[in-house]
Structure formats: C-alpha cells, structure tokens
Image (cartoon, rainbow, N blue to C red; front, side, top):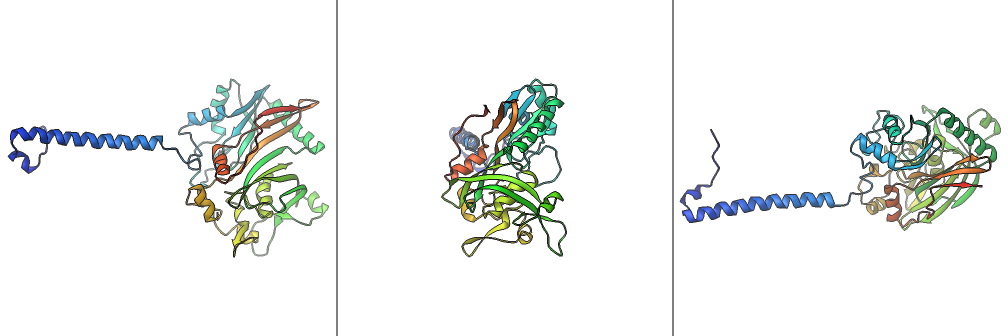
Length: 359
C-alpha cells in the first residue's frame, strides 16, 4: 500500500485556495534547504586545504603512482631520480607513527611506476629516509646501481659532500655556521637498556676504528632567521645515516621542527632554551613539544601533525656524467615545507636549476 504524504492537522481546515500555497511554500523551503546544503558542500570543496593536513594528496594507489611520476627530476641512461614525498617509506613496516601515517610504500609502486616511465623495472638505489623528502635514486639496470655506488666511493676519496639538506629548526644553530668533522656515538648510562645516539666531543681514533664512533664531514650555515624562533639551515654532509642530522642539529641547540625522535633534547626553561640529557629528553614525550607560539602561527593545535622539516635538496654524484664532470641533482621542497618557511618569513634558496653538470 503506497504511503500517504504527511500533512499537519490544520491542513484539512485550510481553504482549498490556500492549500496550494501551503504546498508551494513547503516545497520551496525544501528546495532552499537543498540548495543551501549544496552551497555549503561547494564552499567546503573550494576552501583551500591546510598544507600540513594535506601532506598526502593522493586518495588511491593510482594517484600515488601518478604523483611519483610527476615528481621525476631526472630520467636518462637507466638512472631515475625522484623527489620523494615526505613520509613515504621504501617498505611498509606496519607501524603507526602518528595521524599523518600514509597508506602506500615505494615498493608497491615500483611495477606500475616502471610501466609509466617505459622502463622494464625499477631498482631502489638510494632513498632519503621515510620522514624526510627529497632526491631519491632508482636504476633500471643492476650496472647502474654499481655506477652510483662507485660515485659514492669517489665522493669519499675526493672529500665531496654527497648530500645537501635544508632544515627548518626551532632556534638558530650555535654557532650559526661551521665546517669540520663530527663524531657520533652512543650515550651510555647505567640502569638503561639500549644505547642513545649522541654527538661525541672527545673520542679516540681507536673508537672510530672499532666502530664505536662514526665520523661525518659537515658544512652548515644559517640561510634565514624567522620572526618566531625558527631558522632555515643548509647542511652539506658526507652521510646522513643513523639520523645524524637530527642528532647534530639538536646538539647545536636547534632541533629540527617536527623531529619527534630527538626534538625534545632542547627545552625552554625559564625563558631560555637549554639542552637536557638524552636520557630524559628521548623519554619526555612521544612527540616533540613544539612551543605554543609556533603551533599558533602554523594554525594547528597538536605537535604530532607537524612534519619533520628535513629535505634533501641536492645530491652530487662524482664523475658520473663523465670522468671530467659530476652530476648534481636538485629537488624543490614539498608544499608543506614551503608553507612553513613562508609562515615564518624564511627565504628559500632561489636557485631553480634541477640538474646540472660541473666541468
């Protein structure tokens, strides 16, 4: 039996001439509500998405693969360089690191990405760490992986800094620039299990030989100082393994903004930013305790959604193009990194060249 439309009690006592007007008004109100709802939805769609909350713009695997293809910065003779997005791992580890954990890994995109780039296969050769963005290398042939490895050996022999990073830090490094060799080892303390990474002020060659201390060649400088306690730092480094840059910048009283591993090693105490023991700092909080003023400027309320502001902007492969020239690959920072720099008035380098060779 068909359902009858519902009418209020007073409908039956309305004159027939008014019943039509009642239904017309009711229908018009229904249409108005529907139109207003559509306008609200359209406004929501047209409203700009916050760059920090839209770090992963893809909604499915195809969009993810397309995003990687759009960020290819070099593709020649079997070497493919991609500007890897922040937060994308090589392999899925199944661990949730926070609300910004994305859903795809590089590994599961290799086959469809190779098809898009018209190569038989893609082999990961050198990947920037998961919670960083920037230049990452892939090869379509095994011999290209060997050639990349040989360039690293040449870099080490010629003391060429392979990697150039950009970092947004809380505070300015002390000193603001420096060049030299830095040792990183383990902070040990009785009663704790495991070892905490720390910068070693004094160490012997014996410890280096035994693998207890690893040396890194570093050349850094502060490029820009913001109007909040934030700075933009450029770091040339021989290697960034074992989270060296995060540990080193925290050691310089300027932890990387969004570093949720070592970022609590400097705290504001009675108005001054002071270093605290790695033992206390690394167990202080799951996420970095970012000053409230910085969160307010970024228009976010929680520290956990702020990304680790570390970007591999340049990679040098010695004698790669030929015996007389090096291959230099460059990648622009992602939108969220640029947004953070713009928010605090930090001037990014204006060099727009992506790839160049140096004779």
